Length: 113
Image (cartoon, rainbow, N blue to C red; front, side, top):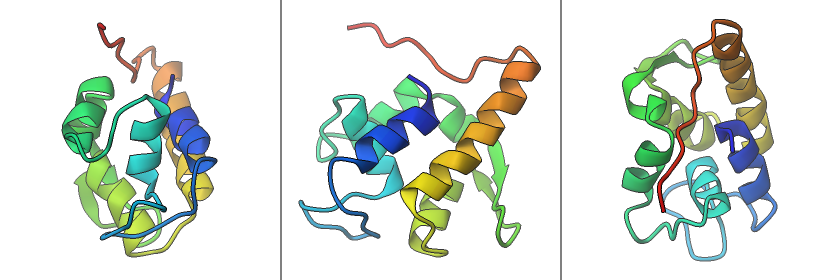
């Protein structure tokens, strides 16, 4: 499952939140983790980086303010600081994934069970 798909799927599970969030809400990153069956309280960031290794190695630029961070940090930044919806974040991630697919650079990794 691609990252944008995971964010959209996980967003259907509960309302959106910013950090710190409670047990009834989720941010964009938590939504992606939950869509992949990852319990957020149990190393959510670590598991997401294993499923989507480009989150930590890919440099990103905030589409709203231009801040430079890792892709994971830009997603957090959009969710918490610019208050984008998870669906808006997923749309933006989808454009990045499509650009990489056009260059034949897969952005998802299979996770061994």
